Length: 329
Image (cartoon, rainbow, N blue to C red; front, side, top):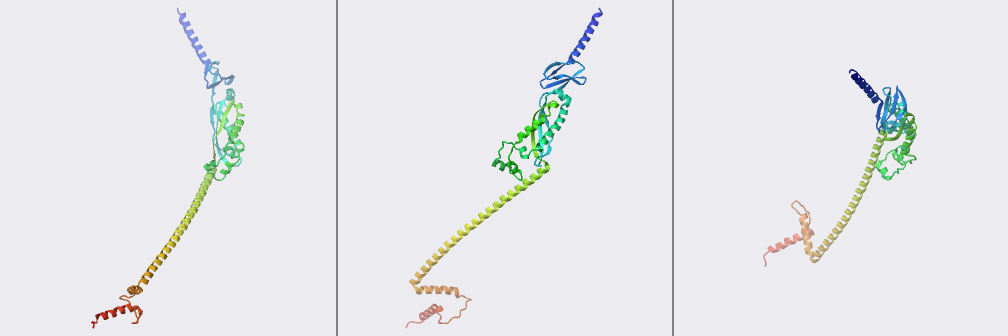
């Protein structure tokens, strides 16, 4: 009667222990994971790369999980001199994955350690390649042909036009490919596969960039002065043409005015001549009266002889009045 509860309790304990042992001996991996089994701090067996349910020794073995996906790496911008001693700031990025988790764990431990090693390797390779390459090979592609529109749109100044017009022998793609090849050759010893590397951005360093901006400003000012000078020259040319045309118009107008005035004087002379020829005595009388009006006034004093021809008509008028006042015989 008392043995049944004891057996039931023992069975329960055994089942519980078995469940704990079983639970501690299984683990699962999904498609994005791979693992290394570590026993007492040392790796055991080959890496586990297949997703699903797996077994290990309970309590004395542990699972170190590693990502199977592609991981990004972004380096810090570096100031690097080119082969032509032009200092530029180069910003690079790369993509990598853990190819051998066992070697990866032994060499770099984790992703943070891998990032530190990648910083050293990739920065060193990029620096070596950039410093041995001309700037034109870094910024341009081999198959890019510079057109007149490109030159006009770029608004080239200083040495930049010479750079764009230089012949490209390898180009940026070949440079990036050589960086990838050299850097990838050092990755297997770390259990890493370098998938890709790219140059994100290339800039002049701050000191050189300011000088470039100063040259660009000076060039823009020079071009503005050139346009201004050409505009002033064109304005002077237009003003000269305007004055010349105005002088020609005025000269033509004066010529026509003189012609009209001459014809008018000739017509007036003809009319005067006809009037004089029709009645010379009356014409002389009229002209004399006009001269009286202009020369004889209240404040005018004339000293003339009584027999002066100037007063002939006045004398005739006085004689005619005297004869008219005498009574007829």
